[in-house]
Image 1 (tube, rainbow, N blue to C red):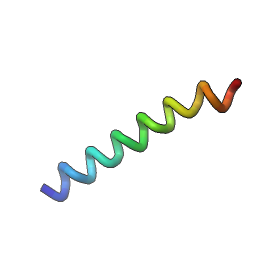
Image 2: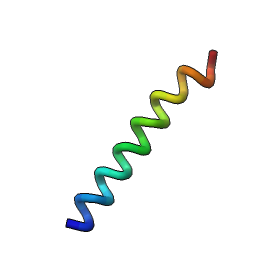
Image 3: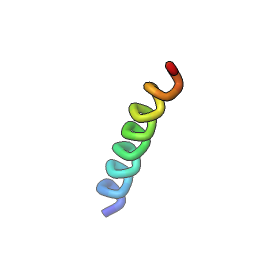
Image 4: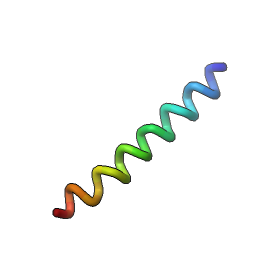
Length: 26
């Protein structure tokens, strides 16, 4: 359960970073 939660958190962080990249470039 902990591993799953950790993985999901990492995925969310990655998604946020990817979504932020385009905005930062502009």
